[in-house]
Amino acid sequence: MDRPVAPYVTPYEGEDTAPGPVAVTAAGVSYLDPVQDAVARDVDGVLWTLCGGKATGKPEYAAELHPERQRDAMEHLRCAGCKAPAARDQHGMLWVLPLLDDAPPESWEGVHTAIPPMCEACAESAPGLCPRLGDGHVKFRVREAELIGVLGTLYPRPGEPGEPAPDVLVRYDSPDLPFVVARQAVRELRRTTVVAFAAAIP
Image (tube, rainbow, N blue to C red; front, top):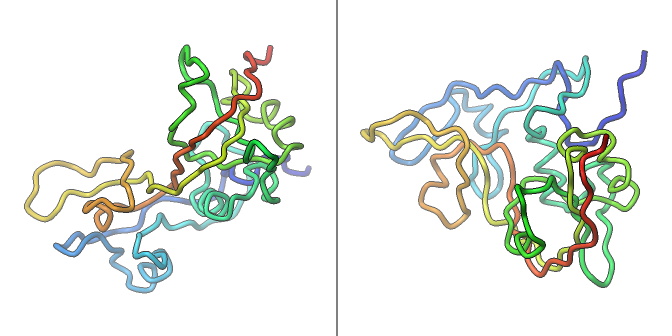
């Protein structure tokens, strides 16, 4: 039986994104395996979650987006559904996001998101595939979408109390950047034009 068709950024059963063993020094966080550390560190020095395994099962829609494919789509502005170039028109690039609780249209100005943009075809089909969009979504155009940072696990500096914080937005200009293991790239959406709201799909 063929695997279900799922958006490009959706993880599958069998894919592994568990963090490897890390060390934290005054310089930042690093993987204990120097080969893994070199592979997982980007050109800006940010350490990313290691991705392995093989997609052998069903799409895991309830899980966080696959770190490697999400980063690819966000950095290159590829469609979250099919990884083709995202749709653009005179009003900007096309985004489709789950609804915020009781959010008026102006709430979408300046929103931070780890969900990549979409092409026109995937913007129509994705709500029928992704439960989060099926529970209600907004479609809007974006003229400015700056990469501002990463979402990931922030480790305390040596000697600081506390446990690693698993879901922290760390901006690229933050002194905390060397101490995060990133899982998702984050853009800030500005100069937005709402196209449509959609209620939950029955």
